[in-house]
Image 1: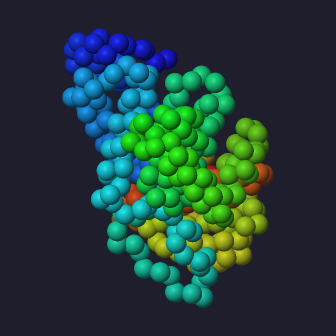
Image 2 (image 1 turned 90 degrees about the vertical axis):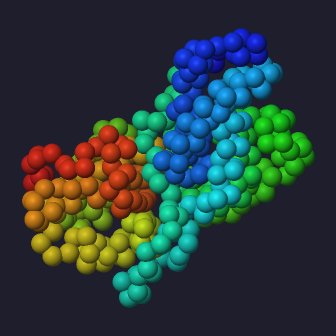
Image 3 (image 1 turned 45 degrees about the vertical axis):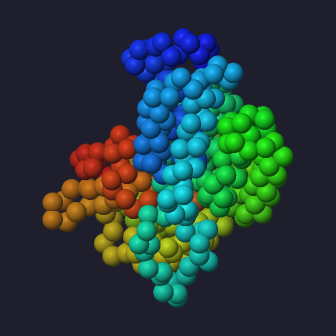
Length: 346
């Protein structure tokens, strides 16, 4: 619950008292910054800078809006400044046509242009309403985030403030220093762009995923397929038009046949049984795994990256493996997987 304060009261707080008042907003601010910039690490830094700047400029709080709205205003403008210096983040499917094994793979990107996964643990909502918690998860889904990053930064800010945070047009205009008509125009353009982007159509399916028991069964089969290099078992879990990517590689694959051909030749190629180990977590509102690859020299499983498994309807719609080992600790997972037995064939 947001605590309302008169401006004078805020100015008179000690640094510790101010921190106690604003710290409960950190996670919400971090999620907001993530939607803006697409990087969990940058979002953490921007949320920290938001709270520090709020302390230094606490005399500017006039008490006309809730404290949380004032913090969001600071965070949004910090993100807009940051985006002037950074390339747009995205995922391979938004940049390239789907790949096949007959086509040479595009070279890895040399710039940090990829979206990063976001831990669900950081999506704690101030609102105990289950619908509010679900909306928070949906608003960081990879499909939505990919579409969101297509927008120019100010359109992105307007859409997030209006459609995710449910601000009024006047509130958005005041926060961004724009007129109400310009906010309404930006919102219209942003909604049009999102509606025309093909990945945005997947969002409707995300609202309908397997029930908990069925989902656990599918995830068990998914882990089994990876740890035993069972290509048919993996493909049986996919929807017909499922997609598969492993940024920073530009290539991505669509459909069971193309995904099957790719994994047989690469990640499940050769003597692959026991090559991979998966530890469960959650990211971007979906099941996820810390992915570990066996190191032959040490015979240990070392962090390979974070894998987000997006369910839609009754099957898996997308598998995105972020091949960045340094992401793994951000999900409270170890860099070396514990020595636990592999799944065995049923």
